[in-house]
Image (cartoon, rainbow, N blue to C red; front, side, top):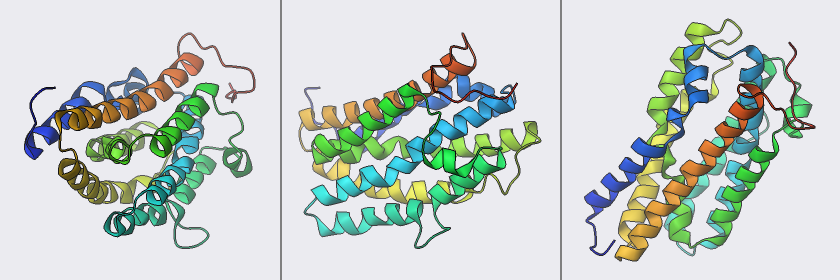
Amino acid sequence: MTALLSPEELEQRLREVGEARYHDKHPFHTRLHSGQCTKGEVQAWALNRFTYQAHIPVKDAFLIARTSDPALRRAWRQRLVDHDGEGDGEGGIERWLRLCESLGLARSDVQAHRGVLPATRFAVEAYVNFVRERPLLEAVASSLTELFSPKVIRHRVEGMLAHYDFVSPESLSYFIARPEQARRDVETALAYVTAHARTPAEQEAVIAALEFKCDVLWAMLDALHHAYVEPGHIPPGAFVPVR
């Protein structure tokens, strides 16, 4: 990039990243949302995704600790509440645990990340390290996959309720609150990014940060597809569905 983009142009470039690279286009998501997954595949998806969900407040805490901007800290700390809740038995992580339990997974195993694919661990660790180590502007920009999540969540809930008799509206309760939370979070992150990316190089870094985050999510689905769909090579120590 050699020319400075306007805030509107930068937002459009970020949205184009999602159109090209967001993980809703992955074959595993197509299977999941269209009812093609076995129960074991859905269990594996929920288990592995929990490891990602559980580390969201960890990466957010790193981001909060890195900024000297009180306004950004105040806005960002709501993400911790969304995922951890205000007390025991609340928050998005708890609701994801209930999803896993409703699928027949043991809560203690899920919380301990037993059976999680190695590639999931590596992808999640890479994301946390990115937020901890890269410039703050890039760390904030990496969260902007939430630009694309509300539509995907709607399709996921509709598809899973239509096709799987082992899920219910109660078991999918995590997804009820997320679209509105994501829209609020996007407002904060997008305003910060468009205000603070003041050079073509910074704008290019912002776009690259969002591409990296898309790669993290895509890599997690690649691992699921390889282990549980085709060719079906489950790594040693990973979750093995009951057939």
